Amino acid sequence: MAVLLRDIIANGLCVVNVKRSESESESESESESESENFKYYDRTSKTSYTNNATNIGTLYYYKVKAVKAVDGKDIASAYSTKRSIRCKPAVPKLTLTRSAGKPKLSWNAVKGADKYWIYRSTDGENFKYYDRTSKTSYTNNSTATAKRYWYKIKAVKVVNGKDIASAYSNSDFVWTTTKAPTLSITTYKGDPKITWKAVPDADLYWVFRSTDGEKFFHIKETKDTSYIDKNVKPGTKYYYKVQAVAHYNGTFAIPSAYSYPVSITAK
Image (cartoon, rainbow, N blue to C red; front, top):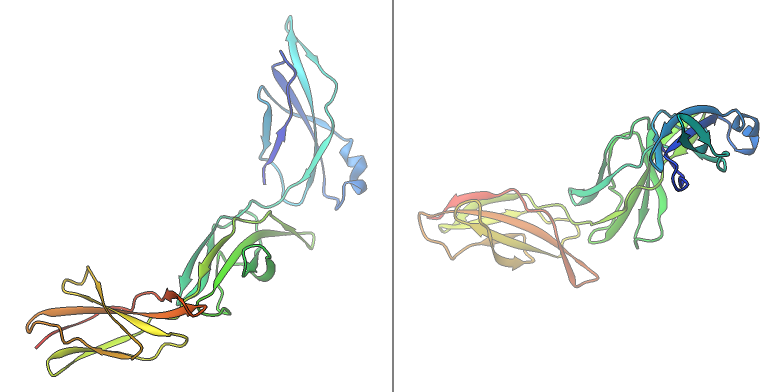
């Protein structure tokens, strides 16, 4: 993690001298002596400074002097107030999708991170630690269907046996769905007949049809696990997709992903 140091430069002064001290102690009080060992570190003409040469878990102390050049000589102020910060891993960026109807979390790899802590909520406010992983993706299979889940994560570096965690990532939510149906197709008296196995937690199914395999239109809602399309023209090839639908609180429809399409020529 880079350290961002901010201080206001007095009016008319143009250079800031930055001094730094560091300690790997666990608390500031334990490392007070180290905090006094300041050395000149860098300079800037700006009113902020990012220190990129730092180590995760190390406690750094900083103080600043404002400097005015007069007749070629540097006239420096007294030291600023001492400030300290312990470096943490960078904050990961979280994205959410679904895998087979379940929440799938993905994020960028954070430099130096050994693992990631996952937090979950069902209301978007009260997050609780849920799980950990060393990977940069995670599928939450232990969820209910047609329910909304929020997530956020932390990147974690282990330093001297202790966990140093980043700040929370952004939070995001996703609705869970049923799995998509798997279709098969035949003809019944010349008409296309689509069948599929019942999908757990599905309340009904939406059937979609296309004549070019690209633009699909909703043609039927059914609670059955098959559908015979009698509104067809002989010799025309038809494509079909189906979504399984679960209801949130008995009213709000949450559809699955589309099934893989199947096709057949009407006779």
